[in-house]
Amino acid sequence: MKGSGGDGPLFGQIPAQQASGYFFKMGLFNILIAAVVTLPVLVPQLGLPLKLEVWPGTWMFISWFVFVIVGVVGTFIWCFIYSMVPKVYGKGSVSDLLALVQLTTFEAAVFSLCAFMGIDAGYYGGTLYHNGFGQAVITHVIAWAVIPIGTLIVIALLSTVTGIINVYSATES
Amino acid sequence: MSRRAKRSLVLLSILALMALLIGTEIFLVYGLY
Picture (cartoon, each protein chain N blue to C red):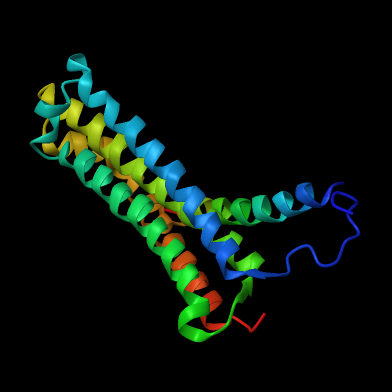
């Protein structure tokens, strides 16, 4: 009785392959995001190559690289980890709640921290530098993003710990 | 309320808690001095 609301626990145990599938789909979605955020390179008016080569424009590249490594490759590695759990530990069942919490917090944290780094520090700061503003002014303008970025990094780390807990708390199906 | 909606609600609540954590952090750092 799907959709009736009275069908067992809301989040139960799921096969590790299904959790692996969550991360596979999110990985594909992140590839799409990575492709879309790379497109502005083709717009000459944005001057990205000019802004990228000096601080703080370099944050655009750091942000893009972090997204590709953590958001795309990292998500596929979690897909691989979940698919390996039954083979390595002989336990085929993981927590649906932990997997989904890991997935959603990881995605939200990585996407937001890359957006803060790339758009505020990288693009906005880089544009100011390109327009001739000095280091003190730019630091004052873009510095607000530092604390949210740090907090989001902590959330991404907690999300990773959630995944580790899920792997170690896997049960036999 | 459907099962799917309930599940989404739980996950959205966790994301909201995350946003609250970030908001608190920003308030503590920038708001209280």
